[in-house]
Image (tube, rainbow, N blue to C red; front, side, top):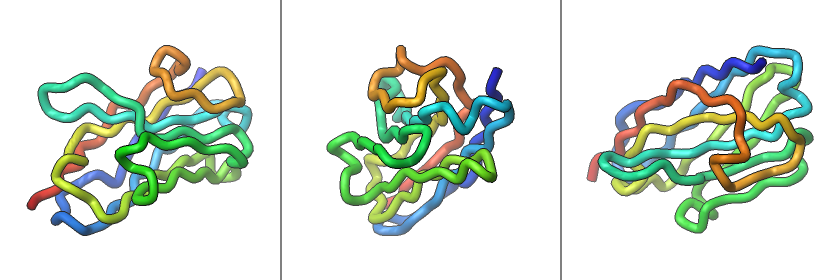
Length: 124
């Protein structure tokens, strides 16, 4: 069992930066691939980024590539999403997710545990 708690969301102006954190509890974190997803207002939840258990493999949605960076610290049981050059269209609830597998995955169906989400609002 893995429990996930996101933090770091908030209101930021376009062009600004935020760093989201996801603290995980559970002894399987270090062997779990992790992902970030987001759900804009009135839309479906979409993939943002994923990272393998070791941090050696990552993948990003085209819409965030070059602006967002996913990373993890297994010693702290935490995964991060550094978001730079934020745009109003990045406004969404951001969710952290964990897999019962070590490799990356873009699909929601590949994740077994989810956090409650943190709101990110980017003003123009």
